[in-house]
Amino acid sequence: MPEPEVLKTEIRIRAFRAVDDPVTCQKFIDGHRHVLEHHGITKVTSSNNEWANNPGVFVIVVETLDREKLFGGARVHAANGIVPLPIEDATGYMDERIFDIVGICAQHGTGELCGLWNSKEVAGLGIGSLFPSIAAVVIAEQIGLTTMFSLCSPATVRFNQWIGSTVLKTVGNDGTFYYPKLDLLATAVFLSDAVALEHAHPREREKMLYLRKNLQSVSIEKSPFKNFAVKVHYDLVIASANPREFKIPLKRKEKPS
Image 1: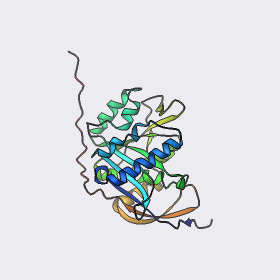
Image 2: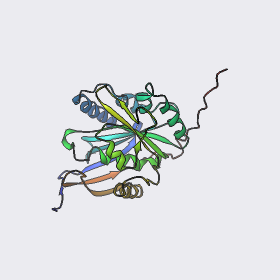
Image 3: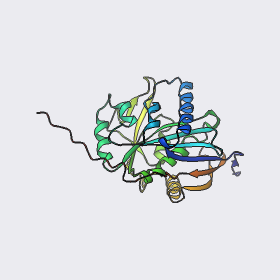
Image 4: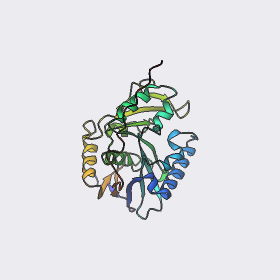
């Protein structure tokens, strides 16, 4: 097979706490909204802009080296016992079991991979979908998350399976919900091992473990779908990360008097 073509433009995949970079957060919000509107979606819980002011939210962006243009990105919302995870807001009124599941996992640090989007320029290449998903799992160790939820479109279920997630069949209709509107199906998935990543595809597991040891590095990444590669500058250090920050005691439900 011929060697993959390297994109002339290099990209950076960068992670940061949302409250530390409001300018990039606004670019993320604008880009995500544009993509959703293009698909006729106007109401998604994870696209609520309040996350930009939440210190429990961490952002991954795919951007140009000068930080001027975003090609896509994702977010990790850490469960903090105060603000519900987007999956709780999105599905809790349909199935209350999600609240108990998140509450139990939050004792050991849990969160959600959400807000995944990419621009039309990189659609179908994996740059705006698989790469940010990998980066999200990589930073989980820094912020003390041992598990991770996600509510996926049909197109992104496979990415979550590659990083080690499985369908959360204990909620919804065997893990599926009609969301964000009745003609769209979303699947709840759960990464039960965000530490050792034993359930991840060997290829992706090797990459994630490598990046955890090399948070600032440069790699030539091959697209999983097309015959080309791109030079990626990784910058995945969360300066204010505290691995004990999101260990939330389980809230016991009060018994009725």
